[in-house]
Image 1 (cartoon, rainbow, N blue to C red):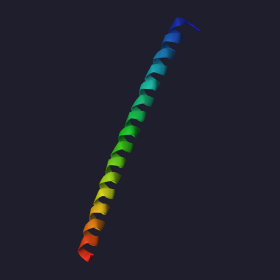
Image 2 (cartoon, helix red, strand yellow):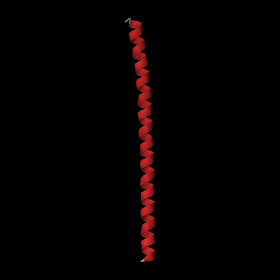
Image 3 (cartoon, rainbow, N blue to C red):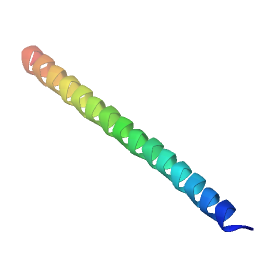
Image 4 (cartoon, rainbow, N blue to C red):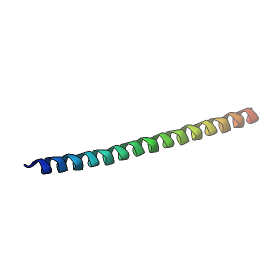
Length: 57
């Protein structure tokens, strides 16, 4: 394998690694956003139930 091929392969691998990193970061951000929404939902459901129980005695 020539030096040019080795350098080209290294550049392709580095570019691929960068794309994989972007995908991982985006997935992590998406999971974080979903978790935030679920926590907010659970909080609102709990608050609703609390006031419903309080009002009904």
